[in-house]
Image 1 (cartoon, rainbow, N blue to C red):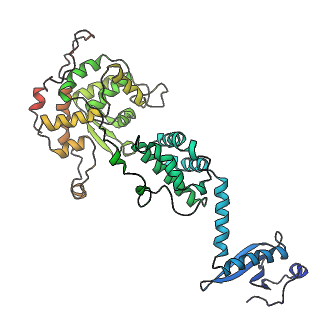
Image 2 (spheres, one colour; image 1 turned 60 degrees about the horizontal axis):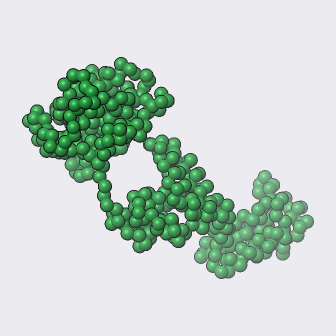
Length: 422
């Protein structure tokens, strides 16, 4: 129980040494610990709950100062406010005023980047915020960022580049959530979409025309392949492997020799490099094996497609430049669409097998629960037929730029592919 006193004196505060609580009045107490340390405590009740609020050590806070602090706290209690929460809010506001949105975002990105699967995410986040956000509100205190700020950033770009605008909104939302956890701001997140900004902007799907990756009609692919053979550089070879395996560019460019079992004709892409976060086995056709053996003969490190620095993979731009030099207006990813259409129109391949070849996730949860196999052996004849179709116009004879078969949408598909029955 607190020691009762008519009130403390400055001399008494110094002379008291017995552990316990000594009342000064009005809820202010001198607290002496068993170790002899002295501090000030303001005791109050709010909504039927008793709370103790520390006011600081006697060494830093005099009796007169402690009484002033207690008087301020009592006033808040009379007004129905919790003085502890009010103090915490002041500290948050002060921290938020000291930290800008730019600084909060930089801190969050630095703390999170080691956990991101793709090392490029940090650079992408920073670049997008620097381009669209920081010039407008980057120097705003993170505690003060509000809905008007979000509208100011997003309104000019929401209709022009809705996909980018949506990502920007999400990145600001994540930054403000991080700031709240760090006690740099309080309250609702003004970048929240559902029930907030969705009342201001139309859904991105309502303003964005869906643009699929430009792809090559499959009848044109054998002629394209002939032209691709005379393109120099690892970028062209990476494109060849991407086409033959129907793989994503990131999976191909990041491939390491340890992932390939050429004897078993299987390439196993680890989960860490897959979009689906699951390992993916790729059956290698005869043309794919031939290409890989040629590449292995000039191997210069662990990466199949090393860049100028041997410890880094070839860039996406290197592959894109191959298509640009060839004046073919398609994307690397588009060849996956070419494969899918070819499989659908020229074979009797079950959809599940074609989807497995593309490492697509089964969206039907019930079907996914039963479909545990990756259908590797069913995919082998499909990929062999695909490899034979892709290379069907290559005769092995020396080629030059003169007399190369032109790309034509009327080029018929390979007959052997049309007869493929898995």
